[in-house]
Amino acid sequence: MPYLTQLVLNTPRLAAPAAKAATATLQPAFTVEFGARTDTGRVRKNNEDSFLAAPEMNLFVLSDGMGGLSAGEVASRLTVDSVAAHCRDAEADLALEFIGDKFAGSSPASNRLASAVRFANRIVYHAAHRHSGQHGMGATVVAVRFTQERMTVAHVGDSRAYRLRGQHLEQLTQDHSLVAEQVRRGQITEFEAGVSELRNVLMRGIGVESEVEADVSEECVMDHDVVLLCSDGLTRELSHCQIADVLASQACAQTAADRLVDLASQAGGLDNITAVVVRPTLRAGAPGSGARFFGKWFSGLAGQL
Amino acid sequence: MHKLVLQFENTTLKEMFVGRSGVKIGRSPDNGLVIDNRAVSHHHARVFPGIEGRLMLEDFGSMNGTFVNGQRVKMVTLKAGDCVAIAKHRIFVEDSNEMDGLCMWKAATKPDAPKMDETFMLATKERAEFLQRIAAEGEQSQIAPARLKVPTLFVRKGKTSHAEYLLTDQLTVIGKSELATIRLRGWFAPRTAAQINRREDNSFYLGAAGRIPRINGHPAIHPAKLAPGDLIEVAGVRLEFQYCD
Image (cartoon, rainbow over all chains, first blue to last red; front, side):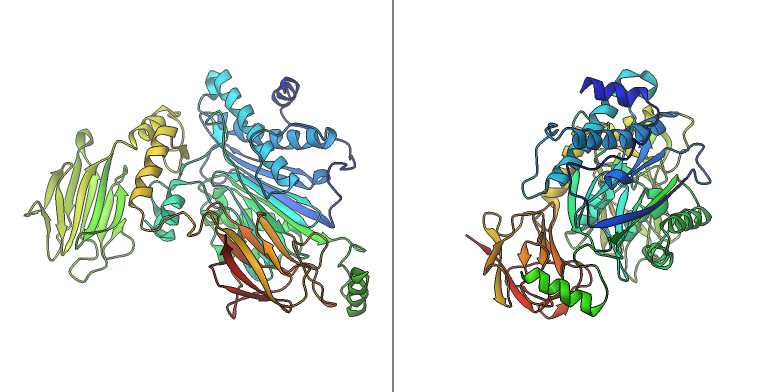
């Protein structure tokens, strides 16, 4: 643990390691194409959003920082780097201990991602207490990791994960904000939440307390799914329909991410805007691939044996 | 910080905290506190923090007037315990300490930050109190109806690996894949037909994957919450959702 702390704190940005075979987790049936874009927006002086793409681990992380001066940037950078560092360490050391309790009924990959989020929380919390300029800093986090035919989503705060499947855009995460809690309990409507004075109040954050609980969920992955991670700077400016339109119409993940950020900036750009778009594609030759009827019939036959 | 509690015929409809820029009240949807009643003007009144943190009420020249403790007013100070009457609705003013910690936190952040749209955290004590209070007052219970019972899917039709499945995992996959929980045996069964997610509050949601499943005959394009007795149909298989001992 001390080694990891030092590693994370002394390196402003972790360089991606040389491609290493993922020994701990089975090679997923999908290849992932991704694109990402972050922008300060039109109002803020600096960009406190960070993201990290670790395609060798099929891991994508986004964080929106908060705090004085540049503390927000530090918090979000530390968050994404720590999540990736913990996952990387777990790949190298299969016996790496888990931080916090394991969820019953969740896969090892999900539990590892939850552990990574808790690890990031400890890193940011201690950093916040160590430096007077960073006192009170915190961040949100949303991370997805693909393994085999599943995807794990973990988050703390109000940065979101979405999935487009067919024509339907699904929000995969529930915001940890005060107004979202009020909506869930039937006290206010979604519209009221969007215009509420208190819409920026969070109930959970990374680095704010010594321990944090992450929400973790699992989803099956289908060919042609499009996954989006974004900070609230995007969702405050664009509607559900606009987001779905862009994700459905752009064949390339990078152009989708660029388009989303541009639209959000044009719509107002009141906050930092970040979009990470991930498109899983079934590997050729993986069971279930092959669009032809004959191929399907054949693999169906094979499945019976 | 002050809180407004909107009541109609002794039923609480809504509660709101009064922030820096106040709360506008009226029939129009662009108000902070919307009262959809013909006796209420579109922009009827507003409540806002005035000098020395006192709460002020201003009537915008409404047709039917605004009354405080029985008296018609134009501009007046409000205090905890006051009752504001607009048509047949009542708005009670309460003093709430639970947000004070929040206000202090906000004051501690840097002065050169943009004033609007700053994100901030509710501290532990305030958060616990807030959750406790709204839980006590909330209409719906968050606890699943049959908490001690085991959620189960019974196979009523179709070829699967088992006749019944306990929903113990966070993600249950229905399909022919080796990784599926409910393994389909049909020749043309899809690898991944549908999925069932267990959410934070222990409720279960049926979602589409390779197929759009039907729940009680209706296609579940959006994830559908499962209730005891619901019938799920997908890829030639029919499953019944129940809570069992």
